[in-house]
Image 1: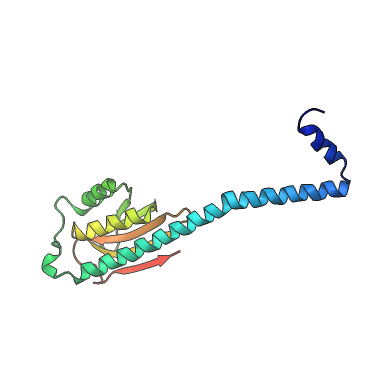
Image 2: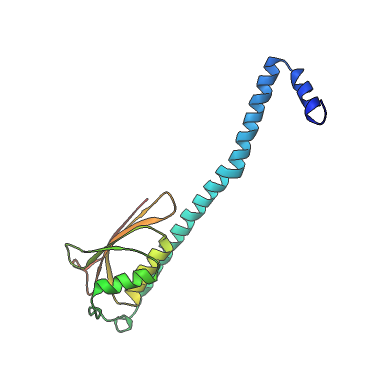
Length: 173
């Protein structure tokens, strides 16, 4: 047989059945190791990096809220209702940020919102902008991390003070 295949086939035919099985098992293990190194490890690294970015975004949001709370009251935006209503303002700013929230009136008052599969940085930046730039209060917040490095965010906004006078929040992963 001409070429490279001839000697390889001859060599293979010279092996016993036991040797052939061992060589096939070795090839399968080498292929699994190659898949692990080329696909699985990078995917796990990407997931870990996304979790780190999410954690940094949450830490930054907490720091921004703390800085906002330390601002003198005259430096804060007015607590009056936004002109034109809160829902159009929230919807307009969300669209500008590239988000599509589901808005509804909350039973405790204020405007309830839900974001599904949003990037944490975008969602938290949008909420911070609503608080700082528009003078809305974030009265309730729930953030749930998804497996694909996005988050589901649910909460309640108010134009003045929150119903209970405090901000409720929880984070689940």
